[in-house]
Image (cartoon, rainbow, N blue to C red):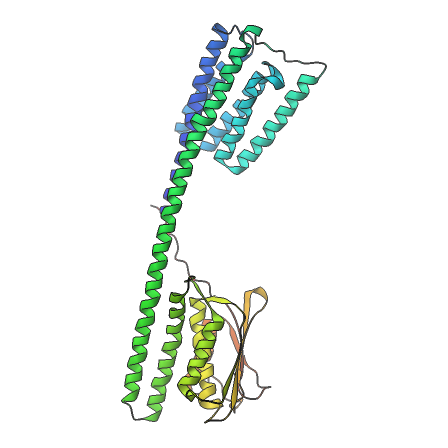
Length: 407
């Protein structure tokens, strides 16, 4: 709705400028026709071109209020101006005529409308100027200067005044007004963007705090539970909540609130899981090989949960007790914006006959479900010792709600 409103405002500004120029040039043409005939003693070609242009352009302007097509109105007046200015220039001194500067006004009017029209009329005007010059140096000249010697200075003065006033008084003022409006709009947009970024950061901060509250509740609940299996389940749930809270915390702490640097996130998550499950002094070596990539929140959270489950399973079931072990996490960007994640450990592994469909393990089911949520694929590499997964996925594009069409 707001975008449509801005487009309508720009169209109204363009229409206002074109109509204003049309009215002014029509009035000038009619007045100039009378001055040429009755004051400057110019009785051939030039006053009749002014008269015809003034009448036709008034008709063209009035017709706009019926068809409301600004492109037609603009192109009609531009073609008439090109033709009229070329004829008047030829019959008032050719390349030396002061009226030739009107051609430059047509180019400026084109660029005010659109860049393509500006380029089109620039090339046309350059061609016309070259043709006028060629005609002026040719042995045979079909157009003679019809401005009497005594009237040349007055004609030149009026032509220059017309060009300067149209450039400064009409186009200049409107362009300056458009520039101020654009600058004002830019300032408002920057202010709104800053407000939204501040609000989004606050949202991430609140979500992180809420998730940490849930984590604390799970930790308190685990302390009051004596059953070892139940305590382990609560601890696993707590770790999943923390892995999500880390994403929101990183988005809140950074300037770019749309994406997070994934290497630092995985490093922090993996180190936390090792401390949480194995303690502060363990025989676990982390080998994290992730380039400087940034992922959006829609991809970062499910991928973080997948890494959380794989590392947790490795620490709890793969590398048992206090034995030494390595955990590998490698992320690479492949062709067609596809990512390749290799994650594994040097633990005892598990049987090839066990998979996410046959096992009762929630962690293994979650790994496959999260890979599907990433719209990717996951396979187990059974050629290596321990447990190793190869995950292929693409960054999930944020879902943009459809624009509401105006009634």
